[in-house]
Amino acid sequence: DGTIKSFAFYGVLLDSRGRARIFEVTITAAVTVRDQVTNRVLYDNQNYVFRGEFEFTDDPRTFFNEEDPAVERLSRSFAESLVSTLINGFGVNEEP
Image 1 (cartoon, rainbow, N blue to C red):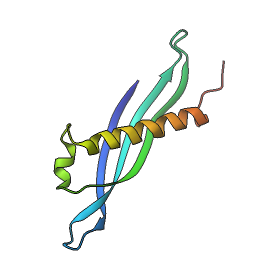
Image 2: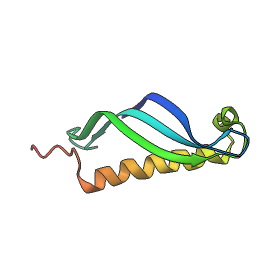
Image 3: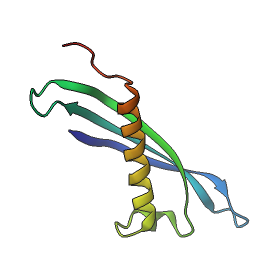
Image 4: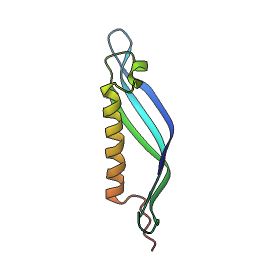
């Protein structure tokens, strides 16, 4: 189960016109992974934080258009980060 709790972005690098071109994106999510047979909680983090830097060539407000390739990059990076966390066992519940 998962829910996006917050989403924020901030300009971190400006172009020659003073417009932000590189943004730090922060996503906070509530994530719970359960065993599909026993329903036992394998991982639970109600404040999972993902941060990444992304470059946008257009107005950042247009970034959030669902068809923008940047949304695909952001979602893929978020998913890769979460899977890496799960595979590496950070926060995994070891109790039987």
